[in-house]
Image (cartoon, rainbow, N blue to C red):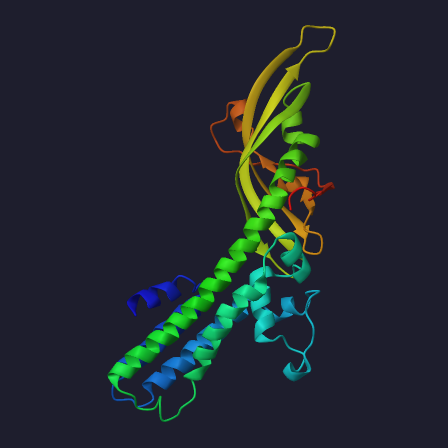
Length: 297
């Protein structure tokens, strides 16, 4: 049971979630309470509801193109729709399946069984009321294992979606640097050319109902050229670290949108300044890169 508890704790992000989980576990210590297991099971289902609401805000779900109102749920999202949003955000089902090669239904089967078990023990009946210590330990372990399975499946499925998205888009980030003039480094010489870009870190930090948000860092390698064609030109090689962030729309993930002011290149080493100088680019012009996925699938 201790390993199941530790497994669940790593998915809890807010103080309320952690306190609710702690209080839920404490019910199991109330040996003289005939409803101790029922109270525990109910509280664990409530914990699941709160975590799922954090991962899938109702106001975001209803804005997704894939969202459809089901008459039986009074216009609100269903639990299945909440799970879909927690995994893929506003990405279309067809895109996730056909372009990313991910079958969300395969993840759903594992979650559904765990959800059924989680709900099973919240109802008070002869089999769960005033049960023995042995049964309480057995049933509570099943509940903890089921909740841990749900959280793990959501996390793994989302990680798979993010991994596939990154593989498709990362190469275009490099070409964006090479094909566009960036003022922070352009001012360093008469003619500055980007020779190569090393992306050290790049991650998708969020997928909501409308956009995919990326951030990361790396090094840009440049050729600094001085003098005119009439004189003997001088060429120097250098590289500078940079941070970046950009986004792409969920309906067309291959269309990267970068605002140049969100690319921050640190050229302090060129000026001999040991302090970290964050030289933000003031040009706010947006440019877009249309990625052709042909050959990736």
